[in-house]
Image (cartoon, rainbow, N blue to C red; front, side):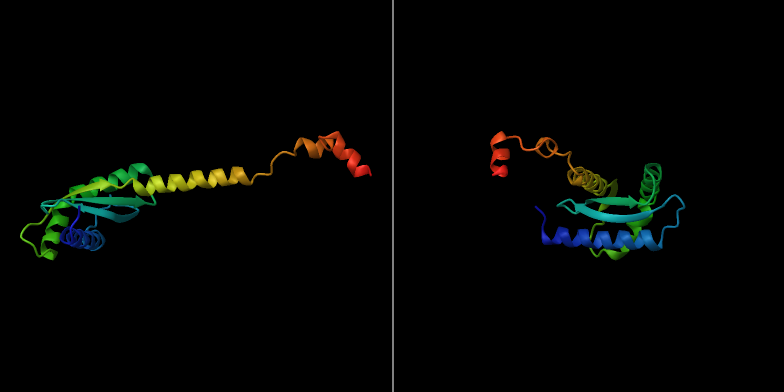
Length: 142
């Protein structure tokens, strides 16, 4: 169960880390569009997991970007300490967020199913050979 305090701390962490990634880090290994999707803070406010999404590059570059951000954790944590007005600064752990890739895969599968659904079906037997029931043909003649 999250409290208002942990939600507020998570929001401040998200804003501070985003700002630090944008303005203070100039590592050439960081490529693509890096987005912080979620921050989970423990109830004792000592640790936080920051979920990152990297879009616009191949998987190897995503992993390299995540590694570079993990190496810069000290710089990010120091910047967070200046922003956060609490006794303790949570220890940050950076993880790749799989929700975005799973969502994109799900959307791709839905689109594929929709295309298969929209394909014109083969003509039915009734249309190709005439009416299936002989009584129907007699009724039509009268």
